[in-house]
View (cartoon, one colour):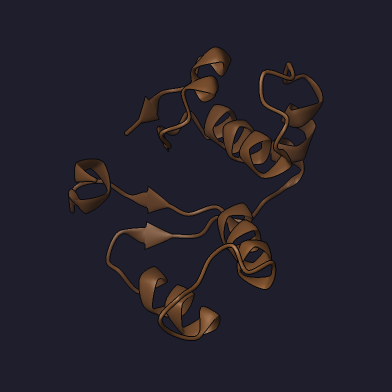
Length: 104
């Protein structure tokens, strides 16, 4: 993805992403070639990557989100995107109903 690879962009990775991937691994729906913690620690050392925390502003914004999307992880990503006016990288076109800047 060009937007992620562009060194001029800061890439924010939500804790919701590693939480959801951990659940998918535990259910056997996703596999990694290396240890989960190593995978994340290595990825987050990439220049320009950071992981801002989930805070009350994000969960408070969830309250007013319409239910175009029912997945709780995706709804949290949408909320974080709205609160911080960040582009969200996703192929899920349902995200567009929230008026976010979706990049794919």
